[in-house]
Image 1 (cartoon, one colour):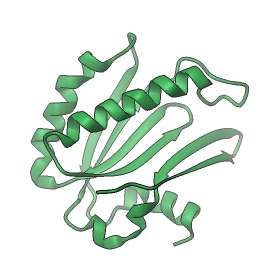
Image 2: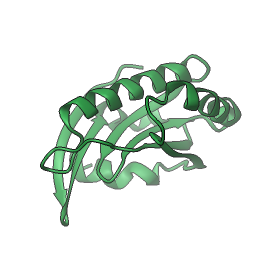
Image 3: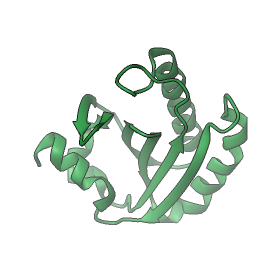
Length: 145
């Protein structure tokens, strides 16, 4: 599936956030059968004056994002939502419920191999989310759907 990322920086309350979101997923037809939301959280070690990842840190995080997604799509079909930088760097994607064991196993296996420094991987989780509620507020806010 093709992706079309949109980048947006927002101040929410007192905190700055940077979102990189796949605009293609506004098409609900592309969401069908992808009913399991996955989130991978990575630690941000170097920040700029806006408290977002420094340029060097963002390059590292985006490289990890790409490596993680490539590893997962080798075993499973997924829908890449995108990333959010704030307190931590979060990677969002959706998979099929039938692939939860494969995706979870893949994350566990690659976690230690991809970690560029101790403590980078904070947590990962997956949950059933047939209606895409986890990301719907983000999409509604940025794309006014």
